[in-house]
Length: 268
Image 1 (cartoon, one colour):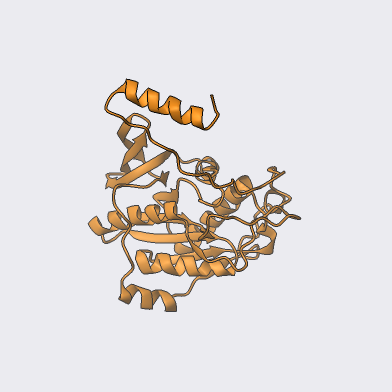
Image 2: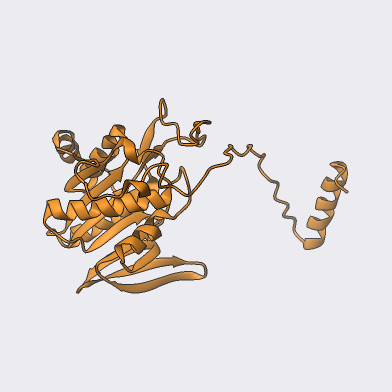
């Protein structure tokens, strides 16, 4: 099985800074990590490879040159090959433009690798934007069936069996390949990279895909020009104090204690 995992390098901070002129993310001076949900996608691919060593895992990331660090970490964990999609023309892309660029990049990677990917794995969303749009939009552009909020994935004959998180429980779903799966947090933690793989990842060649490598890409659908989304305002929500839990022996006692607290606070 050939699996492509899309990953994103995100700021390792709760306070996201936005450029007031372009309304795009400011990355300078902010430590970065692999988006945690993308880490679950890597782990899901690695577990398939554990059972079928012939599985090949390719990771793809769109971002500035510094995103190579995230790709090398993915190589150290489980990936066999990494590609970086990076070009000034892609700067400021919203989710729609990003999905389009990634779809073009996937076609190019398939050409370079000489394979057709059986599955594309993504995190359910990035923690810096929380839109959860890129995976589904990419599935639409690739014309792939998709399953979202996956917890686990197992290889089957020409298909994947997915354990999917639902509002009222988990579901087992079968989906034919090629397909796109987005992953949420499972009940287990992703594996750590080994020393041997870390050393190999440092020396690994990461191919960079620019507009020169993808001459057929429509640049009117990329970057700020190709992004219909416009950010009007961004802000960091103020921190709130922790709530108070009232739990007395009886409901009547709890109600009386709540009434007293609200009265003393002049709420009622």
